[in-house]
Amino acid sequence: MALIEARSLVKTYRMGDQVVQALNDVSLDIDEGEFVAIMGASGSGKSTLMNILGCLDRPSSGTLRLAGEEVEGLDGDALAAIRNRRIGFVFQQFNLLPRTSAVDNVELPMVYAGIKPAERRSRALAALQRVGLSERAMHTPAELSGGQQQRVAIARALVNDPKLILADEPTGALDTQTSEDIMQLLAQLNTQGMTIVMVTHESDIAQWARRRIVFRDGCIVEDHAQPPRNPAQAVPA
Image (cartoon, rainbow, N blue to C red; front, side):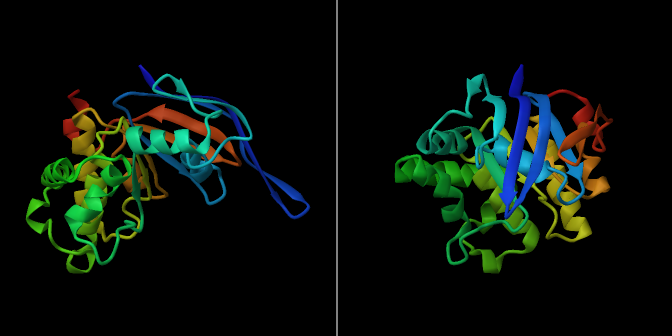
């Protein structure tokens, strides 16, 4: 079943007298349970697509359906509700509150969703355990390594049980070994059924995905399945 259905997406920006076409008639489907890497040079359109898929931006034209629901015509509050309910975000710079414990950072999406404190705490601790960080729950980001901070960010992305994780350069701020650890975690989540769409400029990181999409000048120029780097991914969950 298609989780994402994008049809003829166009996105243009006006910069002074110039009109820039960031996306040019992009159509694609992403099924539930896929692990997709999106690649391309700076300005190729990959980040624009990611923002539209995450309901952070709207296309100039075209249609987008998430889990069967058309989203491009929704108002800001409805888009925010979809982001909070159906999408988990993982960013290059982690985006954690610096003076707040790991468990409190993980609770944030549930605060916005109006979930009661006792349930928030229980679910946040369970999410931290899921990413192997339960023993660091009360530590602030400054007391955690870069890899541990990204694990907190992944736990935060998982805590509302989203259909989709959007990861924007999730290893961009990490060293090689820590990047491997984070990709192992994302691959494991994928084998458990989580749909992951990841933007990366690193070919070795893209090799963890089962499908690679390459952008150039606002268009998809390559879209193919690839054998996963992690052998465990070859076996469906």
